Image (cartoon, rainbow over the protein chains, first blue to last red):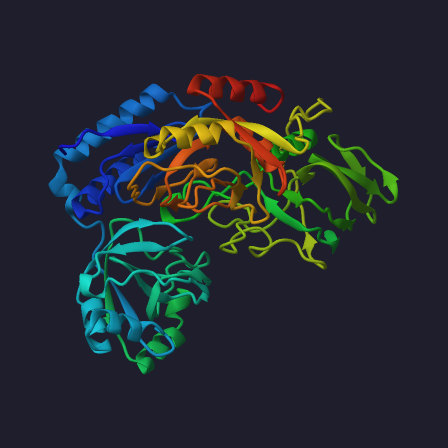
Length: 239
Length: 307
């Protein structure tokens, strides 16, 4: 790592470790690795370690945490991950394949994205599903994974006016990012399809489908296959 | 036999000390808006301080008890009646089976906390009983109480602590507004000096579009440094972010885990309960505080009773 690491206070009970200012997979891999090793160390008083695109935020109980040892632990993990970049870059899990039914009622903005890109809807599907995406971070709502980078031809900006409600499982694009809405929420992303898997189900054995650092591939399926996947209970995590 | 909800009040939710450890997966902490009063209510009954209480907002509920128990109500000052007889806040109240507890007029503050002996029993989701309303997670099916709900309490299981003797909450409830201490950052460098000055010298009013997720503030707009672009990153409770409009937003208990607006300052932990006792229409002013001052304030608040 060449850039100096900056540790900033976010109030009296959080520190932000800034490693950069860009959406970059190597940088993000280091962020995920630092967050992982900090979490593993289970430092007394630390309540949460949150990784994002290019920074790690450590939330702690100020009455139970020795700030100096926390800062030295952070510095140590930053140095360690910088010297083991090769290990850091290995994907944490094998690629997750997510069946998606594109277009129609499932992806009401597929045509708009095709118009934006100046290509057919089939091309949009191909361009969206041929890339292996990296999960850079989770946020917005439980289980929402920000994945990137979408082919720039179809990297359409958000809608001017967000929809009042987007169904759970809907796949969207916002600039170079793509993601799956885990629960019914308002949303401004361009909706191109519907995933057969829900990213978050608190009652499932594995409540979260994604974690930062994962690799994800979208696999186009037709409506019949999509319905059979949904009907098989896969979406409820029963299988 | 449980506790029947005859009327739910405006917004009553089950909260414990929050759902920690999952922000990395996008799960907000939730928990009480006024952590101090939540713990005080539990302490009065000898409950573990993290037991689930009922957070009651602006307009209180009416509850019928199908069991004999004790309760304690702290936080916002309400007129409380047990079977038509006035009962005090901030001390344990013995409730006979068949009694009815009514919240009446609210005099001060925004949120009261009702603790019951043993704590409320709702299923734990990801290790917490807290309700997160936007994602419909935890508490009573992820929502606020409704008429007809029946709440249950846990048995003590021998975990009972020495009940607190103190009879007064030491949290000074705000009347019309409050000065809130903040630490600068983490992104104060993205603001122009005049923007930061505006923030610290102006009075802001909590807008109607405020809730457990965050308080939107109306007041003089805060100017950003030119050409600001920020990558989304973590937004701990108390973060004060400033969108393009220049009108600041304070992120509260149900706030999202990440956000992409520049973050000017962060409210100190000690003053979060005070913020939780403000409601739309109340004013807020900010003063800067350093880490040492924030820690001193927190130690002073904790030493009053809760450790």
